[in-house]
Length: 179
Image 1 (cartoon, helix red, strand yellow):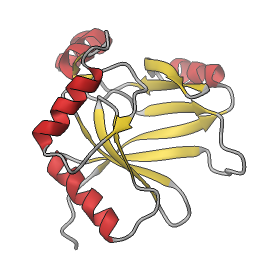
Image 2 (tube, rainbow, N blue to C red):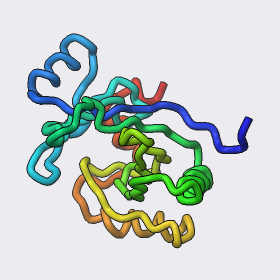
Image 3 (tube, one colour):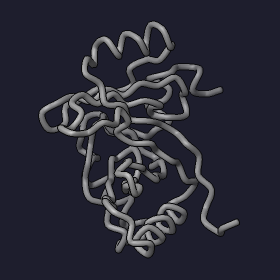
């Protein structure tokens, strides 16, 4: 057994060809609701959730890259703390893993990377905040935790959607969020 922190599989990003058809399937058939939707680059991402403790369990992403045979954009693995996220980041750097990309999404702090066959993975930890997604800014692990938190608030705090995650959960899921 190794001494790396525990993680749990939390959400998956799927490449789709018709986002509206997929939205209808996941909302009408699977019982999800749209928790966020927004533009990124030349497309729009759609976030779907059923669990009030999480922003989303599925993100729908139009536009599979040319030559990509995979329908999975990424698999997200949640860790419990910023210390765990830093530990995984350092471990990935030490192991010379490809495609390491550190990102502040406002709602989570993330480390993206690729496995040997190019599958994209994400370790992340929740922030105490909500901001409409998608958002993306660099995450600087040279900063201490308090500075990273301040940077997130400075980056996204003026966004009209910025709030605590608890307030967002109550708005999105109502009384289910308190259970």
